[in-house]
Length: 149
Ligand code: FES
Image 1 (cartoon, rainbow, N blue to C red):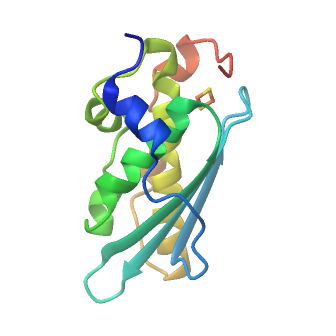
Image 2 (cartoon, rainbow, N blue to C red; image 1 turned 60 degrees about the vertical axis):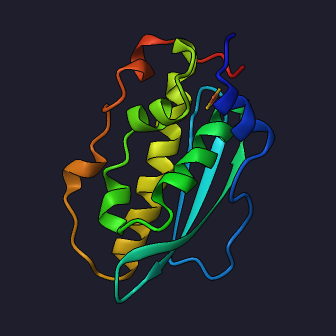
């Protein structure tokens, strides 16, 4: 089968979908080639620096929805510093794999989480390592043709 059961499950029953009015951090990223857009909202407990709630809105392909859904589960309840370490590889593994030409969709999920964390850090004057936001961490971005399917 092209997609794992887990991918199909998260695509059909995405977790933590929606908007968050009182978010502490919002990250919005897009892929210019396919036009998919992902928005990630996080709520952070200021004392513990734990992510207490996550929501997402994704306008995009099934893999983009599945990867953002599982990403919300992976960072919810975690320290915000852990969310910054979330890699697209870990997202793909958690989903039981993705077809090669869909790996880039998981990159969007990683970027959306990082953008939300960055927004939180910026709003609260917290310093962070710029290297965490280095571009080009995704080998597939250059290797695969993005057909938006
Ligand atoms: Fe655009 Fe998956 S993120 S096709």
